[in-house]
Image 1: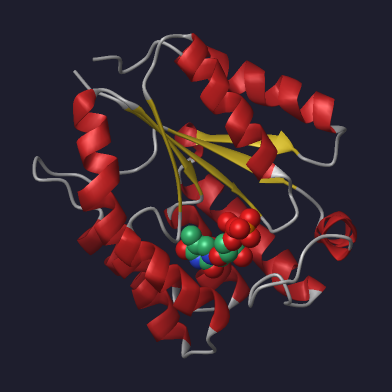
Image 2 (image 1 turned 180 degrees about the vertical axis):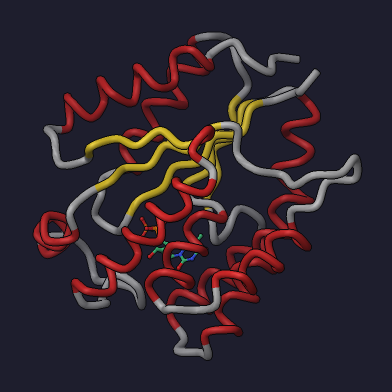
Length: 213
Ligand code: TYD
């Protein structure tokens, strides 16, 4: 029997996933589940240091991909796998699909090499790869996302990329979804916040009791 539940949240910058993740955490807690709310890159002290570097320093595309996966390995070992073994719900603000979308789609880095790194980093002792049970993809036209971001904070290295970068990131997410459709739930993030939340609720409700310890 699988223990725990692993849900990732994805989308281009400005798609509005962050507020909804808090709402999903509340739904699981109300259902009596222990929730680990975490993010990538980041989620451990070392991975947060790597996040600082990778979001703010210019670097070669392979270096960037390696740092994303190094941060992920640490996060899996220190936080995600122990939480799943306890039967907790892990809600992760971005996971490997973001690497395929941003480094693969956005940067144009070799998709197959990313697949090799994924196999290395997410290998399970019993065989197979660790993947989210469910990935909620907040899909949004990059032009709308750019409007939403314009009024927001100081952009990081990725947020300051031009619109065609985000069109390529979006295409990267679509490619990942086509490769692993069974775990993806695509949400139309162009709707009102209330309508998006209604869709998110519909997607997560069947999972509230799954993988409980
Ligand atoms: P984000 O998750 O949007 O956090 P915040 O809301 O604090 O800005 O920022 C993380 C950025 O890192 C985002 O632009 C996507 C990028 N990223 C990658 O390029 N590759 C990855 O593998 C991950 C996890 C994130």
